[in-house]
Length: 96
Image (cartoon, rainbow, N blue to C red; front, side):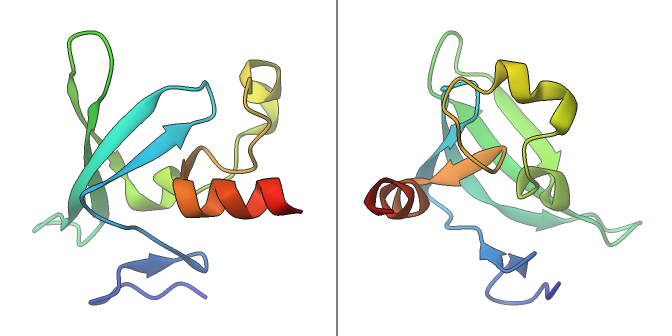
């Protein structure tokens, strides 16, 4: 399923704005919201690093919600499935 609308759903996962997600390299990020590019129609996630200089970032929504790339598995210190995961998803993994 790839549906982009009010619920901001893609790849059967939803973005939860104004919450914290963990990257597979074990860094935290505060998610502001999902925005649509006016020219291309592509959706992007706007987020802020919760470490260092707290830099602001943007990333295509599809990439944000994608699985950790095979070539980066050696960098996956958390063992999580997706690049970025919300705490609810992480708790569900721990219960399995």
